Image (cartoon, helix red, strand yellow):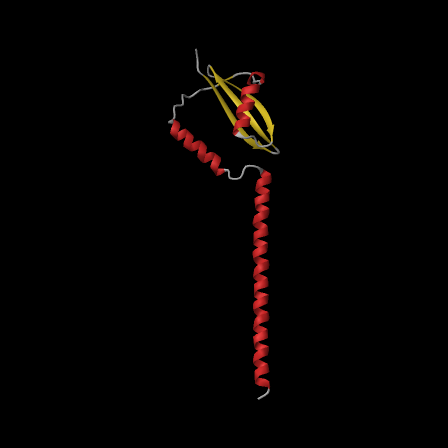
Length: 138
């Protein structure tokens, strides 16, 4: 009896999140594609797998060279954590909101800097007027 391996890859394919189940059995690979819609959470993917695995329609099996993979589980966990942390904010809408916040922050800084400079100019002109008024009478 050969080994059976199931691998799930979730990625963003404009405009939806897509999952690809790859089933490797007896050196043959078959795949099934699932459209999730919004970005799925880990528990949602797991729940989907548990409920809908029997109903997945896999493609016809294709022969492939299967390489025996034996990785240190701690290294695998580290790599998975690194991949998930590198993506940053999850959804495109969240990224757009973050970008908008950064732009607002920059424009607010520029506006406050201009106000500060205008206030300093006004105070300087007031000081100059006071100086002139002091020397007027003499």
